[in-house]
Length: 290
Image (cartoon, rainbow, N blue to C red):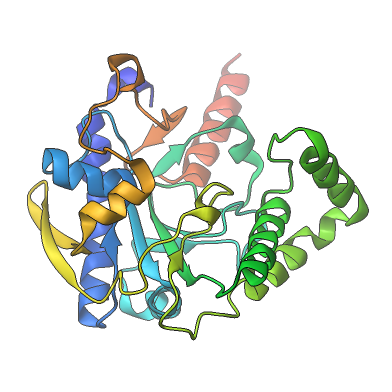
């Protein structure tokens, strides 16, 4: 489906249906989650999506996140599936996406060759505990960086010694080992997670690996209005948003109020494999007719 054939609100509706299911499963199983990042800004500043935004982000403590992923196949509707790199080497994020089955939200051409579900999604970002000392934080940061490097299998774009080191490491390690190496460093980075007095970090990008949130971030959650429903958010959302964005209430310049993902292929009723099969059948019929 071409971009002009649907409205941004259609995407919002599809994504909110995923959020509704996550909210239901979390509440029924006493799991903590919070609206996060642009989604939380949207709730605070606009009462819903940021008008030019097109995705939903949630954050969870690692222990609740892992319980949710484990519970999902039995607790959630079969219309929603988990996509993450723990089980699928083709998934190139170190967090999970909950996707809606029988939909398509293709963002990049390279995704056509990736073997994971390509439907509409909500991002789930797990939070880990920060290492206690200066040296251990440096070691944890290194674990985060190596986890991200081998998870994505490509350089970060850094220059100098960092870019050179990335290039050397990617050449030294066989590609078939990237997934295992990424998981290893991911596990290593979490070895302080039993320390409930430590701050939180959400290491989904190299920049996020240096942003630290209060240790008691998830101790108090409150309902917040998002479009036509209430969901959960950390009570001190002002602090959480200022850590990430600074003055988050200040609107960006008009030229930066743009659609973030801008997919190249969208369908609200069929997943990518179903679309591909239909296209193959159509091409066969066209060839027979000619």
